[in-house]
Image 1 (cartoon, rainbow, N blue to C red):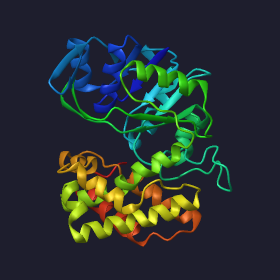
Image 2 (cartoon, rainbow, N blue to C red):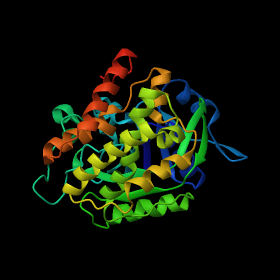
Image 3 (cartoon, rainbow, N blue to C red):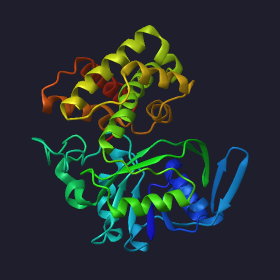
Image 4 (cartoon, helix red, strand yellow):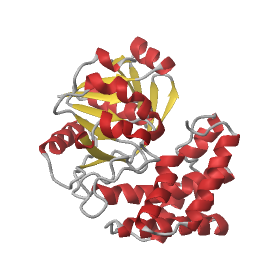
Length: 326
């Protein structure tokens, strides 16, 4: 089994290190100082008090690797279209692309029973670059739960979490999903295969679509956002609007809104990824986390007044800070 990780930053680094430790044939696509550090010194993974450096195959050019059985995409959503052409040498007739990307996936409506089957989300895949270049039939959903960070080039700190939930867009329990699940479990990770990956996507997205933009607008950490009466009310309103959209599309949430907000508060003084991007001057994940939900609301005729307001505000905040993705 040949596994390639495209975007070997924090989460990709955890995957790469764990798989390498387990003896898997894994390679990593990265760039800049992080790539050079992995080439020169190996990939260092810090977990608690343990620190281990593993030799890994790290490249900048995917064409150096050839066809893979599995390609993990662990980039931010807005970075993927520019990589599609470069990824082509990795893709063979049976290659599975494991979509380990936050937010609504561009392939969301692929093999979704009902009137919107095959619908394409314009804000996530302008010009159908991913639909035609990667192909929805290759997609294997993956909801990422671990938290990690690159603390210096070539060094990843795994903060918490071990679960990478897998699922086919059509809900089937496929051999390719089971095979990858076994490989991830051999690497000490949790990798359940679920028949309804979209429910998992929405439960995670519920927090991301509200807490991320609100943190960028206020500078507040999760514990404050979820307990301050004003921001909690805004987040809750956004989540209720999103729930109406998801339920129209057939999703049934296993928890309620208030429990999800309490779970966010329990994380503590965490700075969301969108706030971190803003502070570091990097493009912010607005479309995959928020705009796509707004677009889906239009599609299913569910009004989203709070989401609409927050999208407008956070896009302007990103533009004025030079952090609006192209």
